[in-house]
Image (cartoon, rainbow, N blue to C red):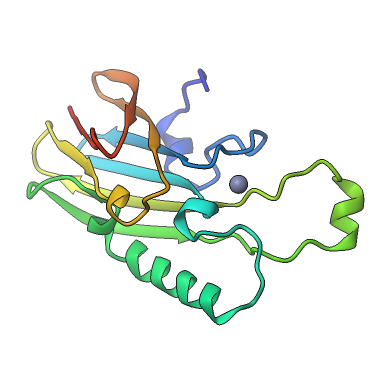
Length: 171
Ligand SMILES: [Zn+2]
């Protein structure tokens, strides 16, 4: 994704990441955009890693996994920490419907692989311009091996790979 998105676009919705590409299991995406003292952080995580499944079977085990994930997403420190100079001012998340495949879907897209993503968005306000970001979700998402980070701030933009062994990034 080479195209630079204007910040106004970044702030208005969750569907920032290309939906055309199927995700890779074990690899999440993260977008960090600074606008003055506000830092917007978005995750796009494969449901297979965040929940352990991508198709619903309506089992109690799945309902429990979904409830647990929602609880975690409501606590931003379960996914990411930014340091004491930053405070969370807004959060949002989107869970896919995780429906069972209908016959219609299967006829339309016989080659479609049933990938689903979990979208999470946080908005932080930070008193200092330099922050250290630490991704904490590796601790409870053991199948996640990497997060592809894209960032844009007042100094420019860049990319980085975050891993369980190297989960932090400093601006
Ligand atoms: Zn998938």
